[in-house]
Amino acid sequence: MADPSEWTLGMSVVLPAYGREERLEAVLVALSRQTYPSHLTEVIVVDDGSEPPLDPELRDGTRARVLRQERDGFGLARARNTGAADATGEVVVFLDSDMIPAETWLEAHARPHHHARALLAVGPRTHVQQIRLSPEEVRSAESMERLFAESGGETPAWLLERWARTDDARLGDDVWWGTSGGNLSVRSDIFRAVGGFDDAGFREWGGEDNDLGYRLYQAGVYVVPVHAATAWHLGPATNESDDIEERRRRVKIRLASRVASESLPRVKGVSFKAPDIAVELGEEVMAIEELTRRVGEILSDTAAVSTRVSINFSEDTERGLLRDYFSSEARLVLGPPDTRMAISPISVTCNADSWPQGLAAWLVTVIGEGRSALIAIEGRAGRLTAWSTRVRSQVQLGLLSEKQAMESYGGVTMDWEQARQHILDHASSEARYWMGRAAAAEDLLTSLSNR
Image (tube, rainbow, N blue to C red; front, side, top):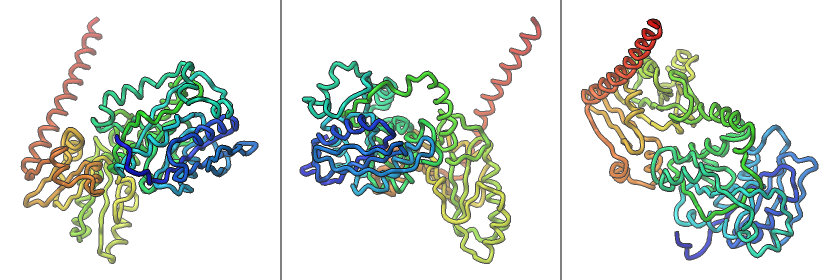
């Protein structure tokens, strides 16, 4: 990607830190050597409650300020949010305080943001065995690449494999898994719009960056690997620690309620923070008796998927009665859809007078990248429109027209009878699958009992 004719974007680098002041100073020296214009750069160090407080020496014309937050457990996500809230640049860039960036690191992050607005740029990291590094060593080095030339650096294989498998995040609907919080950038306003890192939910190592990447992905943001945004991580990766399997187990469980992904352990029939399907009922529904019937049909169709429903109900005199009726139903939102519905991978608007049982499970199988961006069902029963949330977000952002979305990702319009037949076929194939498993289990039991 070519450089813009002029660099114009302010870049705010956020550095969370805890202890190890000399290493932090080495990172700051490396940041002072960046090729990106200094007048467009600010560095924000966030001290996560170090004792004594961090007071790094700032030389070399580094524009940096230090913020401090009280220590309250593992505060990495909270520190990143603290720095981002204080950032003044159009783009916020996150770098861990044990990573030494190449001289062109910030320029590499800035380049794609000058060409497109809605993107999440993710840089690689190279792990070196060297743990201690003085500011003077960084200051006197001919280049960062030369400094680490004989350090036996290695980029994590899982990251390289993921970028290769997805053709640098061009393919698949799980490219957000490659989000690595220690080296990434995004427009500041977009970061704030999705709520930043979940600092209340992630107070242990890992997962907060994947959670952010998932929410940005559903908001229509493109994930872009920036291979030139090189940074060297001082010391081995946490993935090489003795307790890594236990850490990964805890991360997966924590992510499972926040991310609708087949690769996470989501139990059928449970309502999660990130529902599989978000349904919005239209305002033309006025009678509570009719409304409660429709809501009941939708929520009873959730054995296989997690569903959340919102109702835009404009009749003030009835709203209190409706609220009382559904007072214990956490899956229902009275009013506009809430933030949890915005991260559901499937968004449905329903003005139909019925919801066929099995519809939710069928939509999960047919909506998504590589399948269909839009399913519209219409006829005398009314109209139902089911979007891939990500694709709909891109249309709303103006990144795609609806026509372009259909051409790129596909879409289909059908009548209710056609839809019911598709639902029936899907349910039959599911039934055959489970009947087959049951028969195999029975055969195994019989063989064991005959021994």
